[in-house]
Amino acid sequence: MAHPVVHPAATGTAAPDGGRPAAHRAAAPRGPLPLIARHAGWLGPIAVALFAGLLRFWDLDRPNAFVFDETYYPKDAWSLLHQGYEGVWPEISNNQILSSPQRIPLGDEPAFIAHPPLGKWVIALGEWAFGLHPFGWRIMVALLGTLSVLMLARIGRRLFSSTLLGCTAALLMSVDGLHFVMSRVGLLDGVIMFFVLGAFGCLLVDRDRTRRLLAAARAEGGRAADEVRLGLRPWRIAAGALLGCAAAVKWNGLQILLVLTALTLLWDRAGRRGAGALRPTRALLRRDLLPGLLSTVGAAVLVYTASWAGWFATDGGYGRHWADHRSGISLPRTPVVDVPLPQVPMTWVPSALRSWWHFHAQMYDFNTGLTSGHTYQSNPWSWLVQGRPVSMYWQQLPQGQGGCTASGGCASQILALGTPLLWWAACFALAYALWRWFFRRDWRSGALLAGVAGVYLPWFGYQERTIFSFYMVVLVPFLCLALAQMLGALVGPPGCTAKRRAWGAGTAGLIVFAVVGCFAFFLPLYTAEVIPMSDWQDRMWFTSWI
Image 1 (cartoon, rainbow, N blue to C red):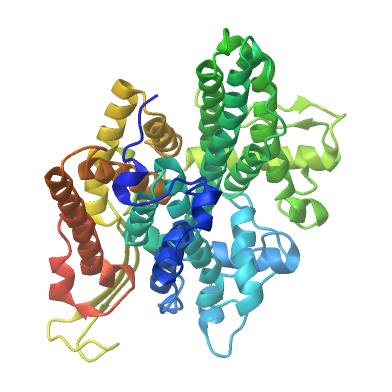
Image 2: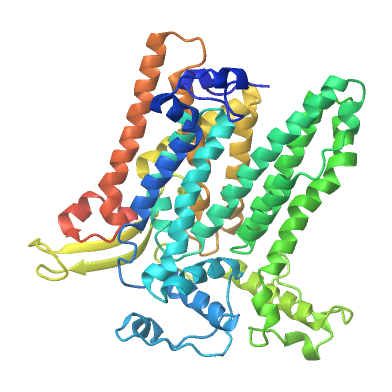
């Protein structure tokens, strides 16, 4: 097994399992500095999360407008909150909602929707507390975005055995433009990012717990590593539930579920082999495969189904009674058979479930067949280099209007652009992770690459579809972890000279400082700040960004 990227001693931090033995802790000196050092594993991540939260909640209600797809999801969320299903809104509803006095023209006619309901239920929590206003429909996404920074710091700490590297990854994510923007708008992608990251963290905890059980089996010797049962594994069940939540926000969570399920099963096989199992593959198939599938895929299916409780519990949802007078179910179109398929007789299935299946077939047809052009659609090949960011909000203002004082006019924009220097550096970090995984069999790099594969690669199967680069907000945590890993390698391995460590730490610090500075430079484009048109043009580094 490969050594950690940076030994805990190299960064002055304790391993995630709690630091020094109890006898040493009892003799530890008292005072504020030793206390801070003992609790740095939480104080550091919390400090970074507070910084991220300050950025994300500042002027959250600005602009007072529906930003990009906010024209859909906040209204769907309000409908779910009051009716249990998504209803139809009149075309003039946006202006009526934003007007004073406010008018909310929600009707009871059901609306066809393209995504499952859980993400909109999350948005509805904010609307329940603060009303159908920009702050109300953005606050829950901002909260999850802030909590994801805290989670990433702790996940990085566990993954790299270094609080410093964990906090570095979290700091990088807190100043990523795409994560920042998607934490401040009432869209679904920031919600799915939170659930996927949480599931990844749960699987890491499960891996550590399982390795301890297998270490005990290794100590027994013989065939103990082949025969040992690994127990209930609540952390893996939690991961499956969170991945079910991700799929219940958007269906791209399904591919991530499959990849991370395969990852945890491969970890089980590697763990048994490392513990001395004579036939690790056979032990995996006999002992781990079925429990692994039940605890991940099984838990995900239960959570996904439960997310539709509002649709099942009410009578007004779209297609709710489609099967009442039909005896079969409809099959979705496929790339091979691009025509409606005949219904399959299944009278023994309750009509509500057949109606639900039919609704899913329609959703699948819509999501896979959406090819209408959009100004800001892009190809996945350009996403890692941020070739075509999405302009989610745009106003061009003349002098004297809306706070514009420049003679050449002003611009106000929200551009879903990842911090360029971070993303470009992350491309090198992914190459480094691939090298470590392939040549040094580093499981940490393999875990990061599995996350990247589950989030990013499936989109290459939909290159003809209308898709957007902001979907990659789910990828941001893995990019930041990969970059933190590379920065840790720059600092130097255990035992290197002080001069080597100084040069490495200086180089890593300069990269982080450059990323923070790049974020500050583009911050006006992330917050709809009114800036002179000349300043806006200075930030359009490529014509594809316009």
